Length: 355
Ligand code: PBG
Picture (tube, rainbow, N blue to C red):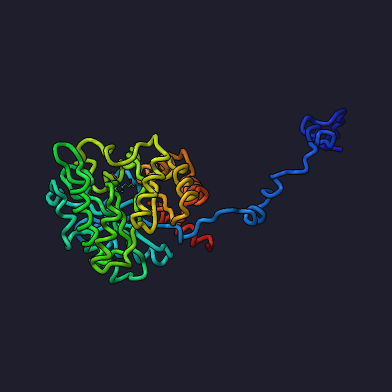
């Protein structure tokens, strides 16, 4: 008999809740998926995908100077780093067993021109950063973007004539940019320009110059996306970009075309392929992995990072949970790894949880 405030309660009939639970209302279900979710130990047992630090590639922005950590307004907690600071970041990444970092330069405005000449300077920021990091942290992989947009006065990834982005002329420059980066010690060349034929041309040039071991991760299916906005702030191309990139980056409406792009890059010699952006394109990621079975990466781009950080900053989302959920989604969709600005944060978290 239930006692409430010391007074025995007479109960004529069970509460509605008790009636729900009564056995005559029990569904005759042999199969109850919730059994496997009933406690953390069993959720761990049946878990299909796990995220580890091996899945992470950490993009870093490099800036001139020393001891500089310059915030990027649209990317909370992301800073442009001078080379000495980038070396420290690489040390930390290696300690956390992040296998690879990706380097992006902020080029000073006076070094930008119509042809992106600074991309071919062996002493440019990226090359210096590669050498400095390789010297101090030889065990970490370094990926370098191949495209001209951080270096051009018009902000495009290629050469422009009469408002048209030239394909074959651009590829000739990209090949030279790739060689300069390989010479500096870059491990993975990542063409992000979406010109036709660039992977094959770069592969041939690398092999011809004795860089047969340098890998190519092709930005194979890269969409003309609004989600790159904060990145363009970080590298300074938001201010320079004239027009948009829709004559070379893909139309967000297309999916079969992504498979053709990926197929071409594999045929031309890509060792790894990438889909970009990430979360809005998980369907593409899944199709690419299913179709080709290649090492396949997702780029969780700057705008995706900014959205989660902005919502978390306003108290609208639990930032840690949203970050973790977004990253496991890439694994579930088929990614072998993720380029993400959360890399260091999630690696710290994984380490703290003993993974
Ligand atoms: C340059 C490049 C871009 C990104 C990576 N490499 C921007 C663009 O294509 O305009 C975007 C990365 C991000 O948004 O985080 N070609």
